[in-house]
Image (cartoon, rainbow, N blue to C red; front, top):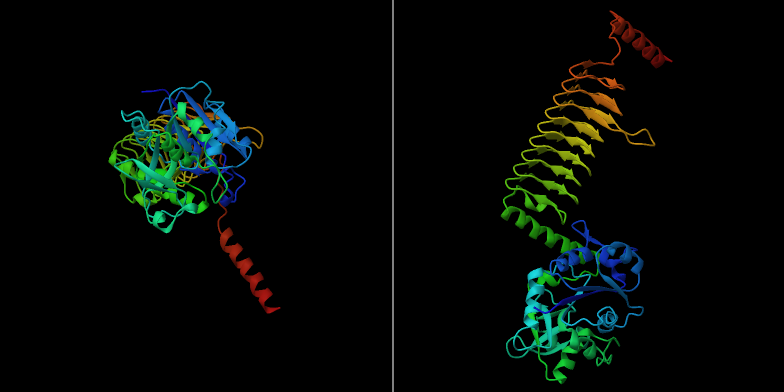
Length: 452
C-alpha cells in the first residue's frame, strides 16, 4: 500500500465543555480522548503524524511530548478546511494517502481506518473517501447524499441543508482519506460562501467532482464516529466504551457477576477465569492474572494481581501494589507500593505501604506499616512465614525476619530476628475490686449533681 500520513484536528476551543482543560484531554476510561485516538493511529505505522492545534496548545504540547508527531498551529478558527491547510508544511514532500481525523472523535477503529485507506487505493481511484454512519439521532451532522453504490452525489452541512436533505440519515463524520497529491490543491479551491462563513473540509468532494474525480463513502458503526463536545456527550461515550469493554472481558474468559457495575480503564488486563464481583473499579495500570478473584466494592489502580490471588471486598490497591500468586488482601485493607509474596495474607483492616512481605506471611487485623515521618518514606520488610499480630504498628525502617512473630498490639521500632518473638506491650496489671469502687464513686457524684 502507499505510504500513510495522519492529520488530527484538535484546534477547536471546546467552549461547551466549560473547562480549563483542553477538550481533547478530557479522559475516557482514564485516558485522554486524544491519546485513545493516537493509540489506534500508532497501529497503522503512519510515516507522518500531524496534530493541528489552536487555543490551549501548551496543554497539548505537554501531553503529546514523546509521541513522535508534529504540531501545526491554526491561529484563527476558520473551519475544518482551513485547519487541514495548516498541516501542509508538515507534509511537505510526502506522497501517499492522508487520513484526516478529529481529536474529539476517539473511538474510531483501526479496521475502519484500514478500510478507508484500502478504498482510496482501489482500482476505480476515488478522489476522496468519506467516513459516514447512521446515528440514532442525526442531530446537526452534515448529510451524505449517495448516488450509485457508494458514490457520493453531494454533501451538505446541516446549517445549509434543506428539509429533504435533513431527512437523510447517512451522516458525515468529517473523517476522510485523500491522496496527498490532491488534498491541498483542492483545499485551495474551497470557498466560504456558507451560513458560517467558514472553509469546510467536506467541500473538497465537490471540488474533486469538478475535476471529474468521484468520491465514495465508507460506512461504519455509529459509535465509532461519536464526537464529544459537551460533558453529557463525554459521559455517553464513556458509558458506551465501558459496555464494549465489559463484553470483551467476558468474551475473553472473565466472569463479571454484575457487568454494569464494573468500570475499566483503557489499559486494564484481565486473565482467564478471573472473577469480578459487583461494584469494582479498575483505575489505570492494573493487570489481573488467571483465576484471581476481585470481590465487591474494591478499587484498584497501578496494581498487579497474581494468579489465584484474592482481593477484597472493600479493598484498595494503590500504585505499586504487587500481589503474588494465591496471596490475599481482604476487606478494608489498603496496599500501596508494596509486594505481597505468594500465599501471603492481609485479611482485614490493615495498611501496607512501602513494604515487602514474604511468602505465606500473615498480617493480622489492624496492622499498620508506619512508612512516613512527615518528610520521607521508609521501607518495611516482613520475612517469609512471619506472623504479625493484630493491631501492630511497624515503624519503618524495620525488618521482621523469616518466621518471626510480632505480638498483638506491639509498636515495633527495631528489627525482629528470624524465628524470634517481638513484643512491646506494657505489662498487664490487675487491681481487684477497683472497677466496682469506681462505679460507686461516680454514681454517687452523678446522683448528688442531680439533687442540686
